[in-house]
Amino acid sequence: MTNVSKLVTDQINSNRVVVYSKTGCPYCIRSKEELKKLVDDMLVVETDHVENGASIRSYLREQTGQSTVPNIFINKKHVGGCDDLLEKIRNGQINSLLAA
Image 1 (cartoon, one colour):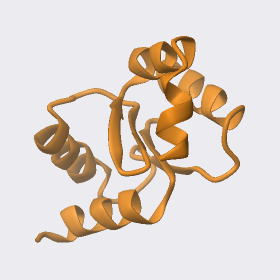
Image 2: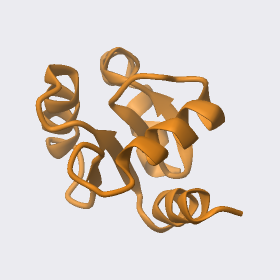
Image 3: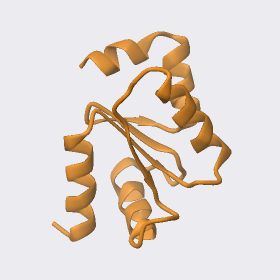
């Protein structure tokens, strides 16, 4: 296991909600705003502000097939990006994800 894979795995396993983000991304900003309405405990990794951010994004792309941010995990489950999150909020699936 590489350092990046261990880091990401540990972050996902140790936090209820993890958002891999970029600071200026409007979809990331929207996702974080919506999640803040639902949870108090959220890890946000601004991949444009951490030394290994490109490696983290590359690893996430390999693991999830998603090449964009935000890349959201709730209770160790990959949720997807902003549109996926908003759909889960609209249809109520977010509640079961957060309760898991």
